[in-house]
Image (tube, rainbow, N blue to C red; front, side):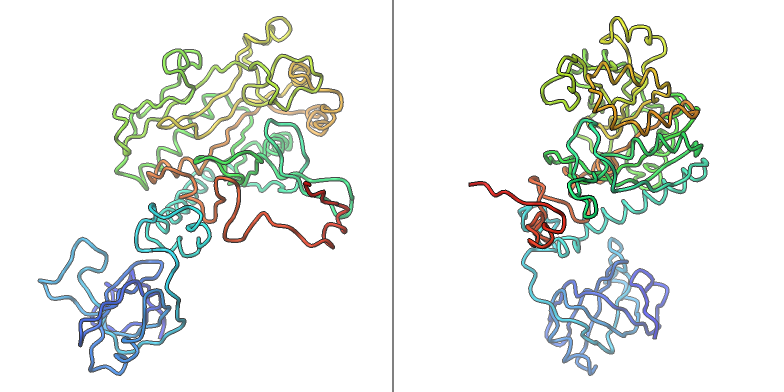
Length: 470
């Protein structure tokens, strides 16, 4: 007999079916044993009576056992119908039970929402933590939203292109995760902080409209809204203006909210486009929470922040001070184009140059940022000089500067922090709640016990020697 998914049992009333899944709850009422069975699609109440040979098996099973159940789908008596739950109008009368796998008592409670359990234990037993209804919902909704976005962008003639994970370490503002080369000992790959350079090179290649659900890596301290690895909705297009990019994102994200989160209301149907200096002056932050009622999680206040300064004052923490004499660091990144009206100020008053940067904020969180890029090699060289790049640092970008000499179109794009977006839509306080297997706040994985030491032979093969602290 072919398996029937629990969500489809209502279509099989008065028919015998086969279901497979986990025992959610078992209740022994003497002669009758009630078992709530669940699979990925839903939950149903099953009942075993002493008349059936399977009753003895039903007496032995416990929560989280994996079972296979044959039974008859019956309508519940009218006085026992529960319209508030899935399959509340039916029950499964068990005729046969087969235990596929027994289970120990879970070390953490998986019936609750899990928010009262310590993070270390939840992540150590993440494969159990993910069984809870809230976490299943978060991951399934994330998948649905990504599929919708893919289809939306493809209809707009965007092409999904995968870019390399093993790349080159370049000074872009955050620490790289580096990967040693076995063949070229003493040399290293880097995991991408973003596909920034690759997507610009795709514009040189004539792709014109690119997107990617990109995995990104940054070796920086974790927070509730940050992880060492994260997901970006990455977009780049040729021959576009800032308005084109913002209109595209406004369209796709509005449709995601309408389709999957109809209870949520967007504060303004046309998202405000606010001047950076005005926002700082009024709110004291460039990520303001513009909700009318800040206690209402179903209100979504999107806003674009534009007209950022192209440069900020450089600090000792910046990765750009190659010459040691530069005063400026890029406000966004070193590929952000200057406002055409301000190009002449690059030589005289760089601090007054406005960049073609656009950040998207939602309920006080920055959920994305992008810009129209520099496509003139001379202006790119000028920006490198202003942020103090040494000749050696410039060499690390030789590939992109050379590519720009072969006919590069004007282009721009955006990188959307998809984890933060889903965190807000799901009313969660941490992006770890919308990840499958996240790290702790210290960047550790308690389940896999990573990071970990490796065998000495592996290190020798890579030409690496680990010096331990005394």
